[in-house]
Length: 114
Image (cartoon, rainbow, N blue to C red; front, side, top):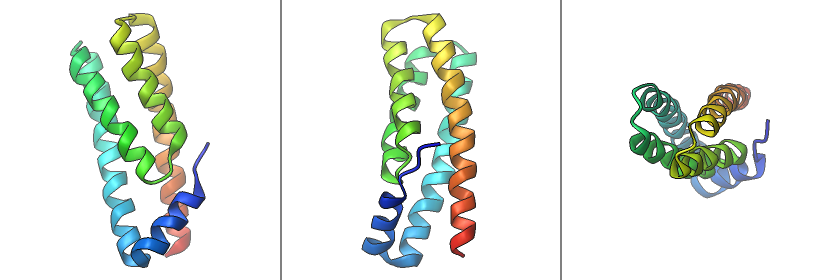
């Protein structure tokens, strides 16, 4: 899993411990919600909404140093733009897998800080 600890350290330096933890917690909650929304839009065949949700994942993931998650979310959006159902299914499956692992990893890191 690619998690950029430098980005997290940068947040802690800029915002202090309480501020950084608040940003990270809010970002994690939003990531979990957007991952769920992205998958739901896919199941409901709302490709435009799925793309929009995946694009929002890119910015949120970048904010806290989850660059792999960000890159795969961008891949999902790109596949949606191309209207390639096989590629969408494959990249969305990868996004969900990486999203779950990334969220677990960062929660574990946060638990170690407290």
